[in-house]
Length: 295
Image (cartoon, rainbow, N blue to C red; front, top):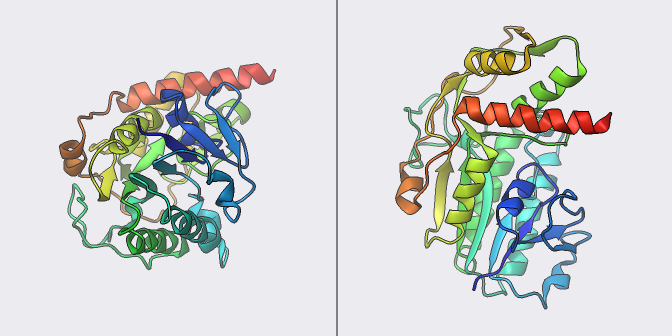
């Protein structure tokens, strides 16, 4: 039976995956949240991977990295330090292990927003030179390809993932939720863009199916549907009873985006279970409980 380890179990997405499969072993500096019962192996940093030498595993879910593109784009080497070096270090170690599958995550922002045709499939052109964040994700993909002969890998180009969290993150939905519980006035830059939102629990189901598939290569992960930020904020307003104001600022990225998930659906038997409304409702209710517990 395959044994899976997961790096990044204390982050945003990792705990959701661990909760769905209690046999997966967490590896990292910080253990998963206390409600996650999975075994955890403490690892100070990726320069000391020899601690895993005697651990039996043959599949790796790698979630170490940063999606804070606002901060990365304002710092010279943050994207390299957080997204590129960790990928290089883990793959250099795994090349000497008999690994059946390595799965890591980049971004749909790699696709060239000026040439894309909706829905965007994996064969469309990319533009890795837009900013430091996107470039760091591109370099990560190149490293995975460099080691691909020794480490069978899946690169997941992840759409706009959202869900509940206790962490302070730059992601739009968790930030809105936290602002609802903490601030009198809730604002977003713009409600005009249309994005492909994927709920963390749906994404986790897809990842767990992918890790057991025979697929190697690059694959999109999204819902396959687009929703405007106006539609999203209307739903959150209805759930929370709190008004969300748009500042109508100019924002980067494509104004409309839909992910083509036909390759994903050919590889695995998977459909998103949560509509945008249902996913936002669960996100709100869970995060509301977090804030009630603080009192």
